Length: 125
Image (cartoon, rainbow, N blue to C red; front, top):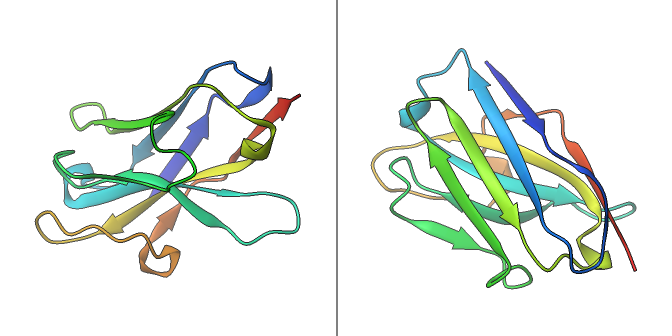
């Protein structure tokens, strides 16, 4: 199983960015998907995620109203659109896959089975 995250970069505060995560070697529609991030010296934290069908979405309070998560089950991809970026959004962003039943969704990183390599997002003030 491979998860390949891309789309990170250096942007200014207020800018937008779209992260992508491509999955391979997995029956994608059996997995809830999520984005986590880890800033230097901090724990990895949940950012946003969605259920197998995409019908249920969850967001961290810090990104609600600014970030949008989506998925394309036909092409085995998950996206994170990030608007109004802030310097505190600076982190390595990871996509993760969680084998679940039905619309179950977890925000606990310990529940996730597979992780991508991460993509760095740097937001300058």
